[in-house]
Length: 404
Ligand code: AMP
Ligand code: GLY
Picture 1 (cartoon, rainbow, N blue to C red):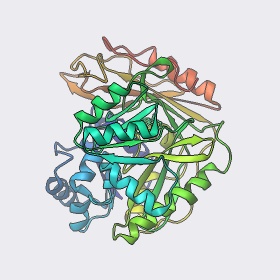
Picture 2: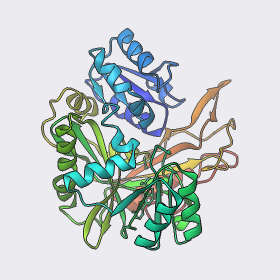
Picture 3: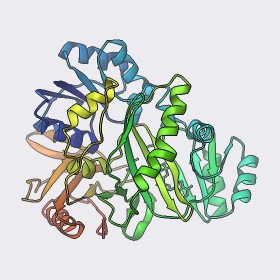
Picture 4: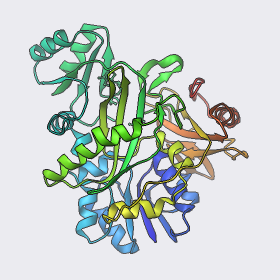
């Protein structure tokens, strides 16, 4: 099987790594990719968000499967263009990807499907926003309706700050605060059937102790020893299948991964958000533990032939993100990174990197995602941090409390 992966982050490197380990995958391409992906796939300088260019590249390469990594190409209609060219594509259509592209649309689907989530209101004026804030009370949750790379959400006790965020956005969703630990569950969907991957936990805040601003994610681990047995099945039953069915009823069959961000509240799991793609950096740890070859799984989703649940290896995986100076603000780029060689139980996934004059240099906010593995979480964690300590990038920062 010849596969083309679209994207250039840590998630795409992790996808390529797993695909390269699948004996069924004979050829691996990526556009546009990064310095880590270049070591295992052929890179093509095609813009990920250009549907016609991606479809043309896939046709030229004669691939059997295109895997779309990030949300922006999905919302731009890349999957539609690839499928229209007669090529199997892992990734939902532009319209189905609105489950991530519009928080208001996601809420509408959840209401129609009876999916447990936070009570919410869509607001377009400062007056509506103020009323909604007072109706729900603190902590206030204010979400930009559109795509914001994980940074459009403000959770705060400060009513003024909540109002200001609402004013800065054209349309916001204001909602009830959900109290409880967060879980990321990825469900693979083939347009009808949906199966779960192993749940993971992400660390969204920039600094130790869950301090600082929200980021795309600073670390993750799987499995979750504290998660009650049966929660995955409950979420498949109460959230994933009703959502996929509701989208199907609306003529939007969902092919790809449905990422369910959950809060495990006293009243059970409730949806915080949906994404139309794999989570980053959760993918790095989930795919590390996946035993079933990835190429076959993704191809089955793209062709409506998914059968049976994916299998996972015993043991634990922990990933720690190394971020550039100033991330999640405007990151410092261009500095040389050293110490990237893997150890026996840890390896480096590249996110924002590129090759320059033979060196690997930082080229994004989240630069690397170091994955450690072991028979248990504590060992996996130690192995990850051991490799983190060997890596050097001027000004970079990482959390020291991932999976602790
Ligand atoms: P989102 O982009 O919707 O995932 O929101 C980013 C982060 O904000 C989430 O991972 C949560 O930590 C937090 N968050 C979002 N919605 C809620 C909510 N209703 N209650 C509590 N925390 C929330
Ligand atoms: N790690 C969170 C996300 O990918 O949205």
